Length: 401
Ligand SMILES: *Cc1c(COP(=O)(O)O)cnc(C)c1O
Image 1 (cartoon, rainbow, N blue to C red):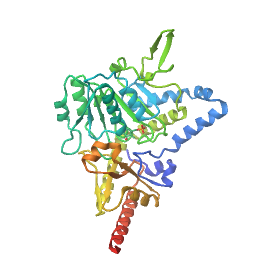
Image 2 (cartoon, protein in one colour):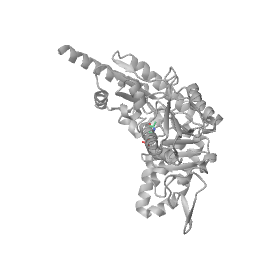
Image 3 (cartoon, helix red, strand yellow):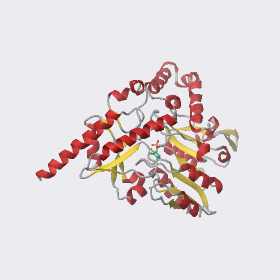
Image 4 (cartoon, helix red, strand yellow):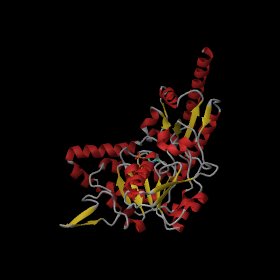
């Protein structure tokens, strides 16, 4: 299916203002997504918040249907949560951690996840073991296999890290987790919306994601998916009157479905908007989206390679739409500012977001230029030309010294 890029860009107002290479931070939403959010907020002001939610019942249920279709899962396995971190937390802290339990994780793990590991390690005497990477920089499934013993309670890995193009071999990890009956929690925050995700194929048991990144949803939205077999044994760390029902003076009953991980009050307009965003991704097709994202990211890596001062920093055999680099003699934040002056959006990934990975590679920070399918070759050239211009400025400055 050929993408109608002109049409897609016409329906994405931000494309007229900025060359947006910060899709791993927050992608530009479509007009339809923003419209759905604004329409609902307006309706709330006109008829009342509860009354507006009742009117929007179908649109709210659509969030679960769309997310289920996105993951090849069932609507009852999905919880709407305000961001990926809390979604991940609701699964992670549902385990009753005990002294001697082991958690196996990836080098590329996201800081918030690792901080949670360290917290349960300190509080309960759980040990956290990092699975080494293979020579390409991706998690090594053979090494994972060799680390399994009866104390491993959880395998928790990041699919695509926040700081680069790496794509971890999540299905190979799933086969190992399933063979040993070990729960498998996948942080799919950067992969969802960028590439096809099939939880049956991956074999994970829990998956967390955010709305605002590659899904192009509103900020303050995210979700958790939990497999049925694990649902029963996981009691969320927080329960409210939506997650559970108070049935007797001394007793409550949890909801049987994944909404036990939700709480009652939430961003209703955001939930509607995220449903619309996921519908749009499904309509374009995740295979097609990933193919275009990889083509553009490949073109960007080639373009950046033509600037002598630039060093690409992406690792792994399969590389996705997140392109990272450094430049000799220029701080990543200065690069970001230089590009911002020409309305080119990139971001900077600092060491503390993915500490183990950055420290092991001797990196303090990198520039992150993350492409989405609505980016164009012309924008890539513009980014490259601005970096070449910056390189000249730096060379001239050094000559004058
Ligand atoms: C952004 C990110 C998160 C956190 O998502 P929030 O929605 O900000 O909580 C988690 N993991 C990875 C890999 C991320 O890139």
